Length: 344
Ligand code: DOR
Ligand code: ZN
Image (cartoon, rainbow, N blue to C red; front, side, top):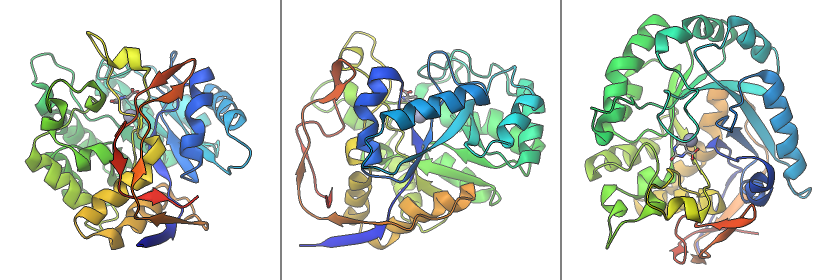
């Protein structure tokens, strides 16, 4: 039997929700990773340090006591985020970044940024504080094709923003295209990217395999095979600019299987296992540890984890549903298998 022992991973992009939903899913993550960057797109969004610290307390209260899990909190950037807000965040060791959602780009993003020029005071303060900007890199213009939104964002927003703030730390979140990979590769070392399991393992055909597949719908949407190959190559490249962020994003089954379904794939139950499977499939298991457990921590200026975990190459059967609040969600690979599993 093949096994692989690596430093315990971190998840640098995670949605946990709140209340009963949070309580029902948090241990899937806490069982796998030491730390996670927590997305602030709650209703209402987490816009102040005070709100983030309260949310952090609720997360910690929900984690089973057998786990030693640290939530790394973020704030939701708006047109109105002030330099003072950034200063308060920068002085608090629990706040690790700000998240930039273009208004209307995705789940709970309506209070996001309407024009990136409106955030310049905040970005200036962030650059001074060394606080990273986490970017949802998609334009929202109705006349831009959904498959082109990342590439157009690079041209219209990211390129001018980087020109104006050359030393701002940026994580281009969940990159999905060859253009995204190339942008990060050609940028300075203060610009990095997270990569999800679905954008390595799937392409846009998986949205329509034998019929419409709402559980493979996330944003940014799955792209063509050529883009998937570029994202996969980046993940296994051993380049420290690319690191693990699952973007696990739970939604109740009824909000996915409906006439107008939500974007988001829940993968927290088998996050590290999916990356192991993907890296193994292309003979790159030797690159998994640094991608999953070193490069993200290094970028954020955090110590690498000391603890180890062991992965076993053995089929794991995934349940059809997982409890979510007082309802259920349909997890990634529901009713199917994953070829790796974490040793309990
Ligand atoms: O698919 C997604 N789901 N993409 C996002 O950017 C947000 C996330 C969510 O919160 O559900
Ligand atoms: Zn996300």
